[in-house]
Image (cartoon, rainbow, N blue to C red; front, side, top):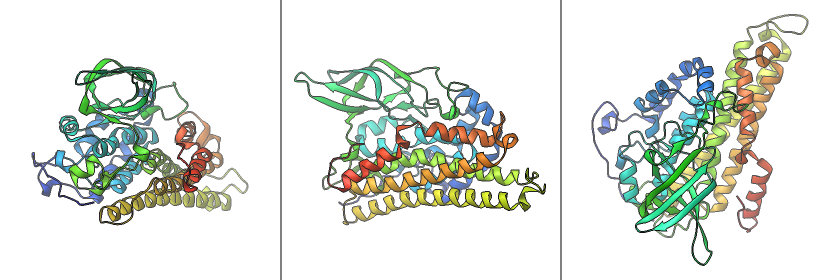
Length: 420
């Protein structure tokens, strides 16, 4: 593959998209996200009740350009890379895993959209500042009709995480032609063409209440031809010149393998939760031990042991997660430079490493919750209880069914078709 330089745009100052000197570094972006931690923790109960994060936080994310990390420079973004993006999300999830889930699933679709959709679609969608797209979901029911110039789409999609502040939505739907052939399509539709249902937040779920995972309905929307692509991202045929996004932007990041990336987006909320649990457990060490002799927990051998277990599991999970993402980026760069292709098997194996990070994070949160004591973890309003419930909600997601995904990884490693 050959690379071409991206076409940079300059539209202003003050970091919204602007001149190159106004663009922040990766470390600056991580620091910006970290600066929001105290306020996000203050708002945990408020965001739980809302079912999403507030306008205050949305505006902060936009002002700090956190939504722009994966957005192409050609369209006013930063292109700071996958590792930087996940480091930023880690900081947000460390403050509130539910907000981390909502932000990640809304902001991350700049990656898939920029990788696989054609130039005209990107030119139109990226007029939105910021660009936020609810998670790609499979329809409970949908109707896809071929019409002149494009498609007519209707349906209902559950668990559209990140939808509250979405400027766009990327639903999938099945088109069945006259001979019965089924084609899975993905669409990009603007906010004016979909309705968000009031079915998330508060007591609707046991956890992840702030993730804005509402249902979305579309009623007979016209989608232009260029705003639809065949949905075969896991085994996309790159050919010799890469994805549409790679050809357009010249950045190996947009070579767009999605197995590792998708699971990393779920697991980052768990590594964030594990670090949050570590922070809370450390604060609780100021209390007295329940075991005789009653000494401060910080002096108790039992609490020291548990604290060490939580610390090592949380930090190992975080490092493994980020190392897997970093490896994917490095392989992309080598592939673009003429090295070996990043295959579906490579992607599945890295996904497996990310899943192991999720298991370690789950272990950290479980130890923290189960050893902190009823008053510290089990009562309403306790932060450890919230983190535990958020992790329990994650475990109901198909992307956290470890054994099934490991079996799929083994299949492709043994030369058989990937199952999911």
